[in-house]
Length: 249
Image 1 (cartoon, rainbow, N blue to C red):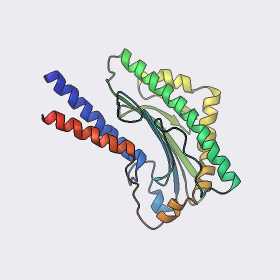
Image 2 (cartoon, helix red, strand yellow):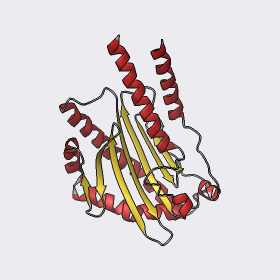
Image 3 (cartoon, rainbow, N blue to C red):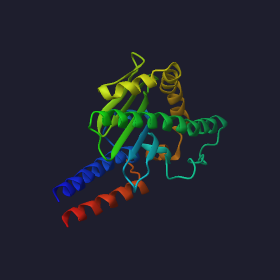
């Protein structure tokens, strides 16, 4: 009974943790170092947030959100039959080209996130600290300031703890834990480093310029908005409720 209660408690903790993280990914947030008060300062902040999980049967294994000042521009998850089509408000050839590139880039991001997830699972399993249910997150952002300068950040976490990051000053990946060293070496190929630096140094800012005219971005100026929970979040909330009820019984 104690073991079963502990298992349910661990599941509840992971689901609550996942809900918190996905809420940060999928909904409006006024906190977080990447946001940097962009909506209030006139800066524009583009973020790609990804969550990959294992052991959860009621939620997508992979979720990606691209947001501009916390407003969703692009969404994809592993339960979707296809990637998000180009919206009607994108009517220029350049913007459509960027949208198509963003769809293509989703596959590349998914590959690297899966690579990091599998490496983390393998390495933490060797140290005997692997959970039955695991959550891998990645968040990459670039902010364009009113004076034309920009800054970028890229971090990966595994089960809520820092796993790997990118030092843009030194132009290299950083592994804060021993278990991340293998993945760090995998990402330090010339092509991988080039792709990271090119996207966050050039492509990300170009995307900001193209997508800042999205209706949701324009409507949000001067007011606070909130995105409705996605179906993934609704499933998570139901799972948490069921777990709590079962634990009470």
